[in-house]
Image (cartoon, rainbow, N blue to C red):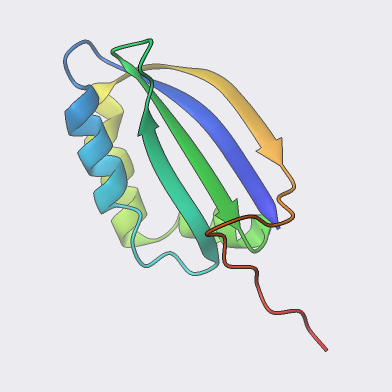
Length: 103
């Protein structure tokens, strides 16, 4: 599996609008096992996005989907910057649908 954890800094006063766009654009992404958008209680402009994919290829392919491209276009003007970004190798956990293994 392929995981990403990233921090997005919204323009002042635009965090809730950006969260809504991120959530709207996250449906129907083949290979996406988990996509969580969270606000940062210690920073009124910060958003954390945690993603788990069945593969890096699926993540990269998602960036070409019309719904994702539209969300990016709508959200970009609301983004002031980016913070930390981490690539992970998820192994499982509560609520995470583990992809079927090829037999």
